[in-house]
Structure formats: structure tokens, C-alpha cells
Length: 208
View (cartoon, rainbow, N blue to C red):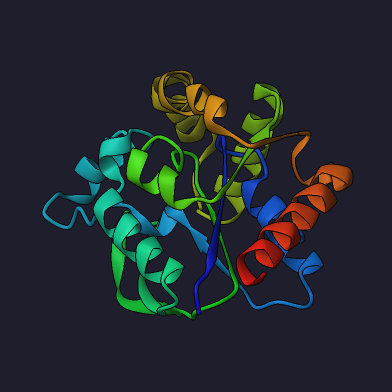
């Protein structure tokens, strides 16, 4: 079974995962799998914890684009894959993997999803979630403190040192590749319904 790969990109805290989840909820008559680019950070186990904390985690080089591309290609061809699991508290890959089943639609999200030409080409529909910088920062603070156990001062330092400049250099320019741009993130129900409708159209074209 061939899968339709739908990419959802945008800045950190823009609501990419929320958009992907809400689109998936509307696709009630097809099988849907979801993949996050966050799982594909390179395993930096050769570095100490303090050294890992100092890495620029918003630069494309820290993403294992080769593995992501290989697994998206396999999913597009109808195969299941064992994706890595990443621990954001230790900045390491977990020893276990999680199975992503074959599905009619694979929704993959990530800040740098459209930066890599191979990964970008595998996305038959490309969505960019466009949200104001201050909203993204607030969401990032809330998430990192609640889910990743980080301190406010560390979050703000990382944002100023790497998140904002990397967004401007690598993330924002990829908006040009989007087929659909979604302002206001997961609250934009009209855009989410439009994305789901477009996916249904693409699926019908494949099976026609």
C-alpha cells in the first residue's frame, strides 16, 4: 500500500503537532500515521551531558536527515518502520524504537522538514504553520518547563543564542516551498479542514 506523505513545517512552538493531530482527526475513513522530526536528532552519546547541552539543536546538522529520508521513503512505499525515540532531558536516543505502521497517509512534522531537498521532495503536500514569534516563544517556554523540565533562564538563553537566529536562517526561508500556509496554528479550523479536504483529493487521484 503506497502512502501519501504530508509534511507540516513551521517554527518551534508554532503548533505543527496540533495541526497534524487535528488533520488526522478529520481523516476518519483512512489509516493515518504520525511522525515527528524531533525523533531524528543524532545520537550524541560520545559527548558529556554538559557538552550536549551546549550544542546548537536548531541547526540542520543535528538532524539525521539520512535516516529520516530513508524511513519516509520506506513509508511512502507502503512499508512499516522502526523510528528512533529521543529523550530531551538527556539529549540522547533511547535504546528502544517505536513502530510506525504502513498507512494511507503519513503526517510528518518538524521545524526543518523542508530544508533538506530529499525530505522535502518526499512530501507530496507541504504545509507551513505561520505563527508570530512572541506566541511561539510563550508556547516554547510553557512546553519546555512542563514537559522537558527546563528552567526559564536556560530556555530564554537558548532562544536568543540559537532558536531565533536558526529560525531566521533555516526555517523561515522554507515557507517558499509550502503548498498551504496556515496562520494562527492549530486554532485555524478553516485551514485544517482545507488541508484534510486536499488530502482526500490527493488520495482519490492516486486510487482513480
